[in-house]
Structure formats: structure tokens, C-alpha cells
Image (tube, rainbow, N blue to C red; front, side, top):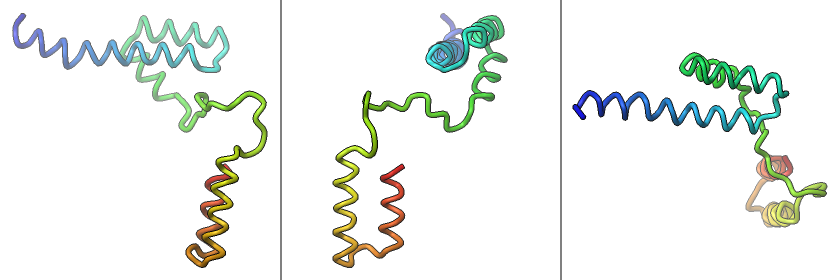
Length: 110
């Protein structure tokens, strides 16, 4: 194997195959309908470079499809309640001012 064969293999083909596999895995884990998944799969397989660019370019930013929640869990979890109680204690002792307390509480409740 020459230097250029190894170069093209490692610089182009291996990353392309990894991206291709990731796109297909991400596609089949997504919430698209069956027809949309089939069309995207055909696009990614038969037009690998253009299909990857289109798939990742049109993917919604901040899509929370991988968020994991406990079944039947409602409201904040106990760890969040404990954290808010500790923040309240720090606020009462004067370590955190009201603005910081509100900011951290909003962050924990989300």
C-alpha cells in the first residue's frame, strides 16, 4: 500500500463511512415517519456526500429526541428539590443574592 493509498483511506474513506453509519443510526432513532426515513435512507446511501450534508444540514438544532426520563415521573426529581433547598439556604445565609438564586433555580427547574 502506497502512502497516497493510506492517506485517502484514512483521510477520506474512514471518516465518510463513520459519518454515513452515524447518519443512518441517527435516522432510524429519529421520530420521522416511515416514508421520510426511507427517503432519507435512500438519499444517504445512494448520494453519500450530498445526502450527509443535506441530512446534517437540515437536522433541527437543539432537537431533544434523546432525552431520557423515568416512566411515570412527574414534577422535579428529588435531587432537584434538594438542590433548590440548598440554594435557598445559601440565599438565606447571604452567600447568594436574590438574582443568583432565581437564575440557578430557573436552571434547575427546566
